[in-house]
Amino acid sequence: MQLRYSFRVYPDADQRVALARAFGCARVVYNDAVRARETARANGAGFPATGLLSKTLITDAKKTEGRAWLGEVSAVVLQQALRDADAAYRNFFDGLKGKRPRMGPPRFRSRKDHRQAVRFTANAKWRITDQGKLSLPKIGEVKVKWSRTLPSTPSSVTVIKDAAGQYFASFVVEVDDKPHPETTADVGIDLGLGHFAVLSDGTKVDNPRFLRRAERKLKKAQRALSRKQKGSANRARARVKVARSHARVADCRREFHHQLSTAIIRENQAVYVEDLCAKGLGRTRLAKSVHDAGWAAFVNMLEYKAARYGRTFAKVDRFLPSSQTCHKYWVVDGPKPLHVREWTCGACKTTHDRDVNASRIVLAAGRKLAFGREAES
Image 1: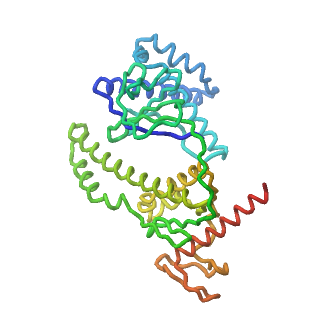
Image 2: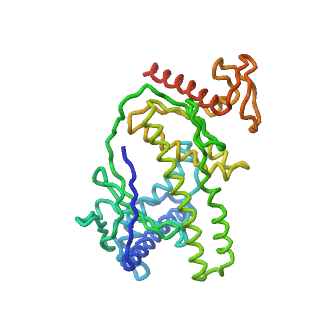
Image 3: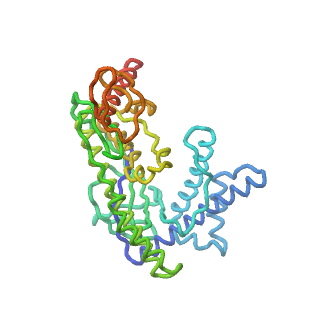
C-alpha cells in the first residue's frame, strides 16, 4: 500500500526565491501544454503526444529568448508538470466515459492560486542528508521538521506552498500491512450532525464543530481583509491571516478524524458505515455543517486503515431506511422529521433512540453484506 507522509519544511530566503522560480516554471509549462492541446482541438487536429510536447515546450523552448529561464530549474520539475497536464486530461475524458466522477476540463493555472506545488522524482537525485535536511536540485538543503520516521525509501517528494504561506514536503512511500490482533467485535456507525458518530454499542461521539467554534475569529479576520485596498501589502498580510485561521480549523478536524478512526479500527474487527452522499448534502441548507463535519474524509480514513490493519470495512446502501426501521424486528415504521430523536415502534412497542437504532440497522446490514461476499468467494 502507498501512503503519503507530509512534513513542515522551513526554507530560508534564498530557497524561497528558488522555490518560487520552480513553481512559476512548472506553472508555465503546464499552461503551455493545456494551450497546445486546446489549440489542436480548436483546429480539429489530434492532441499532440507527450514526447512532442516535451521537445517543443521544454527542450526547444529553453533555447529561445522568451523561455530561456526554464533552464534555471530542474528539468524533472518541468517534466512532472507535463505529466500533471496528461493526468488532468485523462481524468476529464474518463469522467465523460463514466469511468470516474465527472470533472471539468483542465484550466490554466495562475500565480494567484492559493496552492503551488512542484514534484521531484528519483531522476532528480534529491536526497535526505545525514543532518536530516532535504536536498533539492537547484534549491539547496531545506530544513525539515520530522514528526516521525519514514517507513521506507520514498519514490517522490512534492514541495507544497499553501495559502497561508507555509511549506510542506509530501513523500509517497510504500508501507507494509500491519494486521492488528483479531477481535470478535464489530460496529455499525451512523454519522450525523447532532453527534458526529453514533456507534452500535450506544457510544455517542460529540460533533466538535471546529468551523463553527472558529467563526467569530474568522469573521473578524475576513472583515479586516475586506477593508484593505486591493493590491496593497496590508491586504496580502490580512489574506494570510485568514488563510492561517482556516488552516488551523482544517488541522484540528484532520487530527480529530485520525484519532477517532484509529480507535475504531483498533477495537473492532469489522466496521460498517452508511454510504452517504456528502457531495449532495453539501448543496442543501445544512451545507456548512456538513462540510464542517467532514464525513467523506473520515470514511476514507476508516477504509484505508481497515485495509492496512487487516480489518473488514463495508459501506451499506445509502437508501437503507435506517431511521425508519426497528432494529429488533425490522419493521419499517415510516419517515420521521429530524426533530424526532426518539420513537416507539408500532409493532413491538419498543422505544428507540433514533441514532443508536440507525447504527444498529447499519451493523445488521453490514453483517449481511459481508456474509454475502464470503459466500461468493
